[in-house]
Image 1 (cartoon, rainbow, N blue to C red):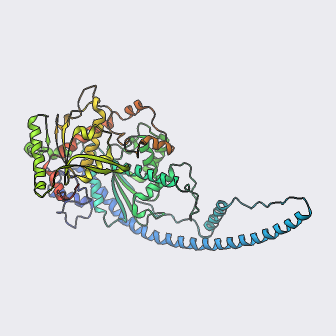
Image 2 (tube, rainbow, N blue to C red):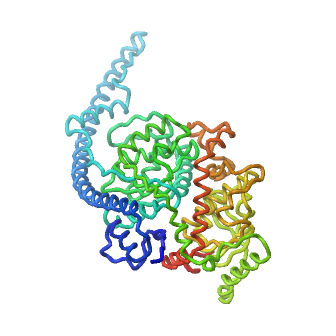
Image 3 (tube, rainbow, N blue to C red):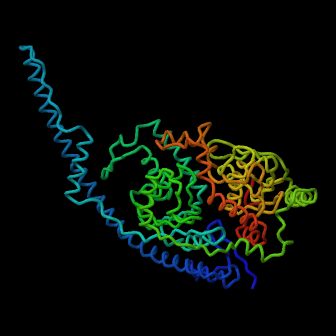
Length: 559
């Protein structure tokens, strides 16, 4: 039987031939094996069984959360009614106090007419609204008790392992199976999540600068003291992460977040993950994540160490680490199962023959579009933070660039994400072998490959070497500093990310040479292997077939 390994569909679905009986991750996995889509892997099957159990626990947790929400709403109504009654009594007492004070003031004014004695002002007991609010909430706690505790959430799963071992596939099997099971659910990739966090931080700071500071207005509920200025921002972002739950103090039902490729690449990431995930876990979120590292090794370089260690302690209580490191890169397995003639979207080396092959592919891609009256032209794609990406040649979902146009400029994940969301097919010419001499370009290229792959885009390119040799250049030394810092150009206007961190009271990185050392070694080698592995899979007919199953035709994305 031919081995044909492929990822689940990126739009949240699985191949259309799945039967309705395939309700859980294990059943879906076994059906994919039976159909020849996957090769059976004992370790993957074991993890699929664990995810199946988690799904069953999520079903139970959803029911428990529904019952809890009934209790919580009853508690809120009772507390609100009592609070309103107390406020009325306080208002009556305040009115009586004012009447007494008015009479006292009248007597003092009369006495002042006959004596030179100044008015003795009475100091109002307490310290104003805040003290009154604290006393009121304590009285309410004594009368009806504190907020009911939600039912304990089932432990999530943290999948870690090497490139191509099936982590994302397994996580997506659970996510696809959870539809209709949990009330709140979302799947996010690291790049998209960090961009969303960064964008939301900018907006929140602007809103807070133009209005009252957080905490100025009196709100119902128990009081929680703030110890730093960053926490309220991360709390607000966390509350919006699962958008349909943003208006609730706690989730009304079970909540699931599937987070792909967790990594810590800079101080901001360390603090953001700790703040946002910490908040969500406290609210009962079930986290299922993938990473190349065990979570205990996520921050081996000690970025914002004290903050992150506290987060790890919380994470250990809420997720079960599971290794999927089966030492097999299934992307390569699928490539090996096809003839080289079938792998026709990556042309190397750079010469007139490969240039002609790419020219033919480009002509084939746009010829039918031109027959329908469409023309190739330059365009601009809007990007986050008010910027735009220049597209030198494009036509209805197909775009063409040189390597320099995409990787020689200060672009990052936001730009490449906008590109991948707009175009289903991307042509790139003249990809060089990368070394320390062009390390920034290599860094951008890997981020570009990540986004094209995550959005299921077709990449057609010419390169100086095959994927496995693309990052082995020796000009000015081999690559040792690659992944990370890809967001440093994605700040609004001219404010770079590190300046944003300063205004959030997060220690900035000041020693650039230290950053290079921190980002060298294991993370870079993983990034090289992942990019090469993805480039290999993106050539295969199975990758093209998956795109067709998703309906990614030339009309599904457009300029």
